[in-house]
Image (cartoon, rainbow, N blue to C red; front, side, top):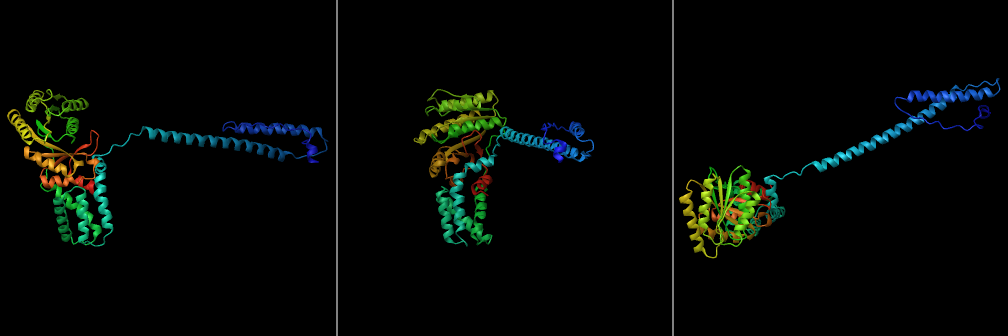
Length: 409
């Protein structure tokens, strides 16, 4: 009866399209109410005048329902848009940050840690495994420690000295627990390398001259190039002299490094007198007021007599022409050759007054214990070490940092 009275079954209602906006919401709601009210009034007038109908509640119901539905729909769409935009902005920000952020450069100690990775696995990792199998300290433990050190090319004599020092220190500290041996060994190795040990490279005050010797393949020319780069980056003026005149392509290789690090190279033709090259290098260094003159010199061991004569002649030229210069004589050794490097050093020591060792290719060997053997058997300090192929990977040798990186402390 109610549907017939109002005509809902006769006339199809048109859907009301409502645009909801924060500003227009109030006006839109009034328009919906007004339109529906006019339709209802018209329908009532067409019916019996005696019919009394209270349609205010119906109008309110219709207007409120449709308005709320439109508002909810608009609000939901707005929320979805905001969420999508926020997610998009977050993704874009993360992508930009990931792209823009430069890679972090490793510190010198970080590079040293990486460079000693193979040696650390050969020594420290095995020591950790060994100590985990022992409760108390006994002779078997020391024997196995000796074997680990010898396998890392520490050398028999040096290993025995380290083990004896370790035994004494454990007694002094009254330590019987095997788990504490590693910390004591760390202190023993540090003391072993730092006692009466001067690893500083002497190039101050300027002028300074560095003579670099070593067998072919040890990394002599590469080390010279990296040294030149380092000194130059420290603000020093540098000059190089190609006095290894008998090795094929040695002069060309040094010139390549000279171009790479933007340092001039004094050279003669292949087979020339090395002392003559040194003489010209000194004169050029004086004329240009150079801070450091680096000389690539003899690299032969097959004839010690000729080597001795060649080096003696070079030293005479330096003493006569450049007496005011601070002098370093560096021997380059390949760490991957282990105990063979020790034998090379002993032969070179017979022919030259070596002031320091440059130990290359430590990153490519598990036998980095040779550093300890060089220090002990030769009484020549290691002054620089190569821990990678990069230009910055030839580092000054710091005994404390070396032991820390080796023992992963």
